Structures are given as structure tokens and as C-alpha cells.
Length: 259
Image: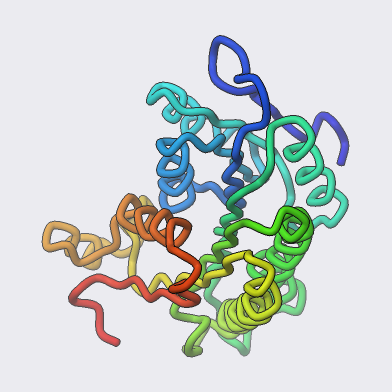
């Protein structure tokens, strides 16, 4: 990866802590769920290594984590590019600390009629929602297996369970992500690496939902949409689980969301 394509902040103000630090790597640290997950792990003493394709968009999240006394390091990285993924994981492992938790949180929800869908966009959605997960899981799992510990959490969606009209590309990619999670869990579980797939089934409290689906967003007052902070709490719970009772798949939905 070109060096100027990685933006590393170098820990909290005042210098990096001595010795290796435990890292939670969040791929796709957006303004809602991904950011909330990063904040949750940072509160527990993890260095939150957060990625997006544009590092500038990460700065508010990094500033917030640091203001709360945590550590965060932003990286500009394209999760679909193998060379960039390999370089990113190597840099984090060699300069910050061991990746104890990997959270893959890239969405790629772009609805389109099957009759109007293009091959280019269909392939790109698969790259974003599934192929990039494979690249990151593979690289991080190699380190985790050598240490015989680690947690890998993959954010799924309703589309990974059932397809719907106008969601052929997204549903196909999320179904593939779920299959990847199943294969990884069966292979890595016996090596003491916990793999879990989280199905987020419902609207999330985001600016996109607020502006695009105002009637749905109005349900927020009755706890009718998912709070990103509460989603993040479940990710922390998964990481904390004892290995004699690991969860593989977790459904998260508001109380009023139909099954």
C-alpha cells in the first residue's frame, strides 16, 4: 500500500503507551454502528484502529474517542484491495499491537431493480460486502491462529437471510458473507478464535434513515429503530463470552420489527 494512503494518528495525545497494546480493528467505521463499536472497545482499553476509504471522515470519531480518554488510530484504506489489506494488517500488528478483535462492518446496501442492475455495480457490491471481508478475515485470522486467541465479528443484514425485490446484489453479497462466517467459525473455532455473524434486522438511527425514511425514523421515540450504541453493546458482549458458550449468530431487531 502506498505510504501516503495510510493515515496514522499515533495514539493519544502525550505519546504512545509502552509495550504492545490490544487492538480492535473496525473495518468500515461509519458514523453510526461502526463508530459506536469503536467507541465501545476503546472504553475497555483497546486501541481502536478504524478504517474508511476517506480518512478525513474518521477524524470526528477519533477526536471523540481521544476526548473520552481512549486511543484511536485512523487509516485510509480500500478493503477490496488485497495489497492494501495485507499492508494495513502488517502495519497495525508491527507498530501498534496484536489485533485481538476484528469487526467487519461494510454495508454496501444499494437497491436496484434486477432488470436495471449493471454487472459492474453488482460485482462492486459483492466486493464491498463479501470479498473485502474474506481478505480481512484471512489476514487477521492468520495472526490470531498463531496466538491461539481472537474474536472476529461480521455485520450481516436481513438480506443475508432472505432476498427481496430490488435487492438482488445486496442479498447475494450478504448471503455470501454469512456463508463465509459459517466456514470461518467451523475452521477457526477449534483454534480458539471466536467468529460470530450479527444480523441487524431493522432500521438504524442514522442520518440516512432520518432523511430518507422520516416515517420510520419517527418510531425512534418508541424505541422502534436500532440505537447504534446498543448494537455496539452486543458486539462487546460477544467478545466477552466464555468459549464454552460462544454465540455464532445473533439477531438484533427492535421489539416492534416483524420477523
